[in-house]
Image (cartoon, rainbow, N blue to C red; front, side, top):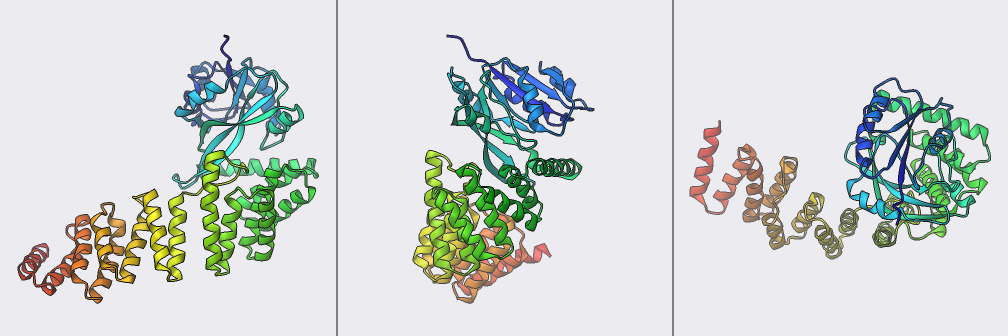
Length: 454
């Protein structure tokens, strides 16, 4: 049986900093690498040549779809994977991708999960995009910017499927001049697309996203509302549009308007996280604790459904269960429902036993409710504290001293000295605690140690 081949198609300009990592991630799976250069002046082309890529020149026309479609002309593989230079195919996805390269009698595209690294170099936001599709069946790109193949697939009566393929994207983490140039280019192209196609809902939606991400809320709301009025987006994208429109209204404290659009989004699909997260934020803003808790519980339920069967909205988000459970616990604690608070803090800890905020909340709760046995147990089983937590431990220890719980307070100061063996304040308090608990010899030894440190 003939093996189906894969062509990688890319457009680049001055990507010497990123290109090698991108090509290295696909070199063992791509049968052909097609790179269309739109005017590089750095080492981009020499890097492409080192990886055996076919390099073609294309005069940039301020139109991403035209450049992408030019790359498709040279692709001879049965399937096409398209990527940008600031992306890497995750190593564990190679085998999954290979399995997808089957014979198809109609146009097929696969949604690939994109892990977008943010500017803090830590946060990753998940999205998806149609990155893998059948060649030689008329599939092509459309859109001056934020180009897509999905409209083409639909017109050809093709099929869009989910995949287990992951791509890591670093572009959103860029700062400085590189980011400024990208922003300037994007604004120009997005504005041009709206001018050329004023009745294109997707054009207004993407321009609204640009303004929203750059803090221009009024402009974002204007274009989001225009996109919604045009009413030509598919249901899942409409739900996403309603969510971001609601978010911008929430930022302006226009809570009734935000709530209205959230409810419209939920009517389209209840199996989502984003809209219920916005409902949670609205409830917090209105100090409606019970409603906030209920929306967080819905987020937990929907998160499990999405992990099992996939997203209904491509831009939907997943929030770690332990973080949600921790906030639910905090809300119950604020209502003085300490039983439920403890239940949810412990659920969070079962999900992630290294979650420091949860451990801190359990300590606060035990201290507040006088559950000294539980407090001692938490401390004795906790080995994840570091210097960041010293102030917290000092404050909790001081509270226990005020309550006359000297033996448990000693446990706190043991933890502090495990982190910082020469912590003067902890040593002074420990010496005092030894004296208060009748351990005179230990108190003297601690005082002597303090004198040696002076």
